[in-house]
Length: 111
Image 1 (cartoon, rainbow, N blue to C red):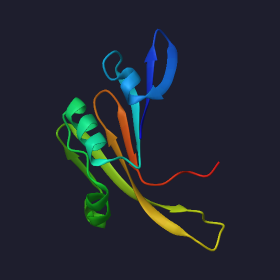
Image 2: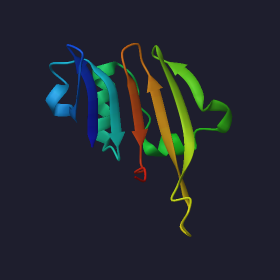
Image 3: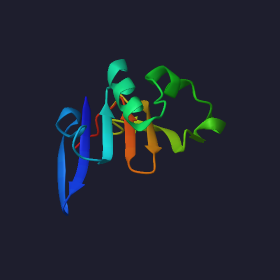
Image 4: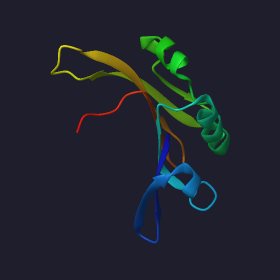
């Protein structure tokens, strides 16, 4: 799923990728459990290589912050469900380009 936050005429808009990709410049693109095709679409639109879930998991601790294609990439492991018996961790990648922030995640935050 691709969610987008954009701003036009001092008004913030939040919606789906298809609603905004042709008309507005996004400020934040949130890739939640993205499919390979979604990674490709956003990567091509921003001219960056977005890492897959497997690539995110393989990143060495010493390589979790890097610059590539004019963008800054940071991958961190976050704990999910910390106050249950089923504690897990999942990687999340933050990508900062000249125009927007991209998050790639395979977890849902708790309310």
